[in-house]
Length: 177
Image (cartoon, rainbow, N blue to C red; front, side, top):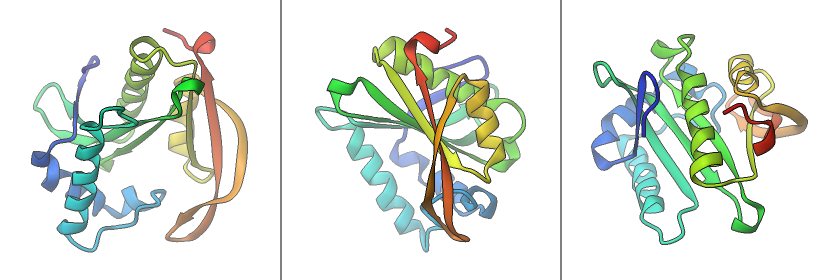
């Protein structure tokens, strides 16, 4: 899968070191509920679980590595969590290396995932969320057409304590192809 400046590939075992480095960055961890891994083994276990998800008969989770087309630099990961088939919906998420923040890559990646959800997977609805203090992610989601539908109070267990979480939604008929 690709977009204008980026390529997306399902996570593989060869992504371990780059994924581990991404997970060790304190700025990346600020709004992430996973926390900083204690060892590369923790990251390997996480990666192995994500790879196993891709091998299931009924895939419910897809996790992609994101790389620059020019230079092949690893810049982050993103994913789709599919809901029950009857509801025709999914949730999107992303995590980027701060060296690549504020360059439009997150907007480009979410836009590409939306295309996958609505065109390739024929979904009716896509959801996303972010901590209310995560202003950059909120802006990205709004640029991509998501609408804030509510706030879940003290929903995210961050290292700084419980955080409120914006809940976003986007329907296929609202999506700007």
